[in-house]
Amino acid sequence: MDNSSSLFDRYAPILRSGSLFNSTGLAQELRIAQEGDIETYYAPFDHVERDARLVLVGITPGLTQARNALLEAQRQLSLGASPAMAERLAKTAASFSGSMRNNLVRLLDFIGVHEWLGVDSTDQVFNPDSRLVHYTSVLRYPVFLRGQNYNGQPAPDKSPLLQAQIEQWFASEVDQLRQAVFIPLGSIPQQVMAGMVDSERVARTQVLQSLPHPSGANAERIAYFLGTKSADKCSSKCNTRRLDMLREQALQQVRELIASSR
Image (tube, rainbow, N blue to C red; front, side):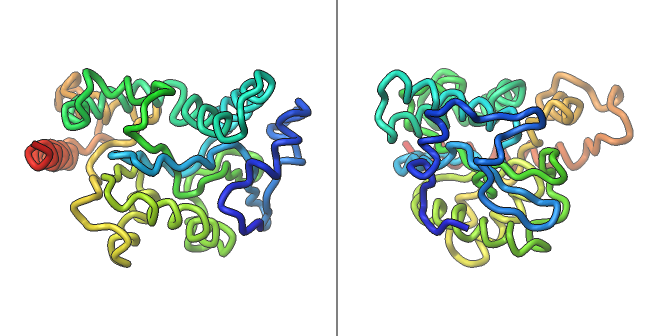
């Protein structure tokens, strides 16, 4: 595994070549490491927005996000952008892209994050010119299990490869963002951020643990959290009492952030 903080320069020749994909996914030339059925591939998610006030933390970029980042980096390089600019714009274009982004904006606006950031809607933080938000994943580069998007199983702490990648790349990012507020999206990111709190890399007040995951597969929980679906219309899989508690926690924490920023 490469020890550099950014692999962009190493993979730039492949980005320029145009040979980024094969019939099953990403080109083998982009593979960083493998451990059994687990593979990690390169896509340009290296950039760290050091002055960001908010950090959105996923588990790992999926194939859709990886493709979007690679194609945008390739396009920017072909237009003559510097590697640093291509790296930043590729990450902004791809991070939480697809339907997940729309759900995330709705959730963040609902709890008032846009007000804390001083924008009309958190949709604006996905603008390439915005420097308010840093997008990242506990596994910075795309991870696949038997060719499919990694979903948290096996757990990262059961894999020496994944655990090493969290420490090498994600923990390094956390150390560069000590003044930001982190929102981990999903159980694995929440567990990893809890570990960062326990190790005193960040303060407990800097981590908001209370949002449903913005995945389209989580549509019912999102709808209930946002108040667009009532409890009596929810299935037994939707733990409305827990969502009520998480909603109040999120609203309270953002109210405190807004108050402290005035």
